[in-house]
Length: 514
Ligand SMILES: C[S@@+](CC[C@H](N)C(=O)[O-])C[C@H]1O[C@@H](n2cnc3c(N)ncnc32)[C@H](O)[C@@H]1O
Image (cartoon, rainbow, N blue to C red; front, side):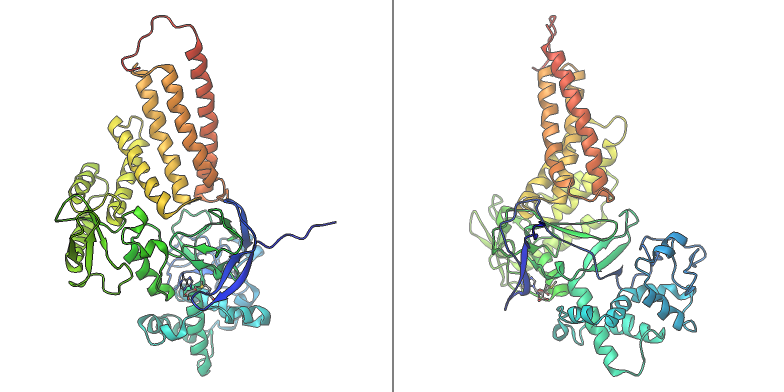
């Protein structure tokens, strides 16, 4: 007899969150909570990129026109016959509406079509009554959007374009309201996706009916992956108890409280009050803290992080050591000056990046979001040197330290399974191995010490794999996981060889540093 699978979550409702997902049983880190395919997927609104309307990969543009178009509508750009036969996202309904509007549509105004493709695809689902009822139940925050700049923008870039292309009726007054609602549904509920393969930089959005019900917390308890067929998998990233809310982080965890809250208010229409946002020192991550200009020992944090006026003169930012305070204006001035210095820095010049880091450390906590942005630029520059045949030893050490620093902040803001942490752990193993091998070749360490350092690197790889192995094989991170597995295999063999060598009777071999 087949056993019925136990549903891992249920849909609940509260005044504050609206509908949200709640764990229906205890969940372990790495456990799948749900798997789902999108009801629709398309480019971000106002995208001008040329892409295959079936598989959604980007296409080369030759003389501004696509090389292959759908043989039925003669409008939809496609990769070729294979994509046409599979017709995955260029549906029959879409093809028919293009055919019906031949007079106004052509392959040469494809940019206009691409810009409205996602709302059009959602609109076409109207023909499926059951699905449409569910779409209508999604949050669109119409009252908060009405007559705001985003409303006006969508009227110009979506409603008017769709009317002018003949995709919706021009004289039906309810069309404007419905299309605005659909734009709201897309802005509030879609997940940002990468184009298949993830390497062409094309940004897409997908609408998932169940996963979109997850509530937000800046330190979510889930880890999300998406494969090349846009199948979304939601994993528990931490232990989740039955009855706990299932949270997903709608924003970027490395932004600092003000940036995260601004993004959520502007795009998702609510004021986040999670534990990270409420704490003046962001749970010890100090991602928005500047060095106290009075005592120069402690770090200052916003006394009331949920204030609407963080940069007013009267808003106090307090030092956790001397308890002295400064006004918001001084903080804003410090941020603005530093931001422009970071914008102007030459990203390819390690010395310039390092000297700016030293300079800004006189004003900021090392984990301040601006310092983290700078650290990511530095890491990219270190990575470039480390991939050359003979990287400098000091660069290897610095890369190792930068990865460790990033990893330590991520432990606070992305606890449990995290893609970025997986990548940082992978990147840490590389300089560790290179440094150990160099020290051994320079006769600075014994074979036993070499084996122990290689084991340390192997430990990092293993930990990184516990996170990266959840990534679908076709994504860049999935490919990194595959590489990490191969490297771990090679490393394990090296460790065995070194240990065997270390156990052999020694003939007066001495090391400078044992
Ligand atoms: C993607 S929808 C989630 C489903 C939605 N609650 C519903 O009932 O359809 C996002 C919306 O949920 C609400 N929401 C999610 N997380 C929240 C939070 N931490 N605090 C307040 N509102 C939240 C906000 O209204 C937000 O715009």
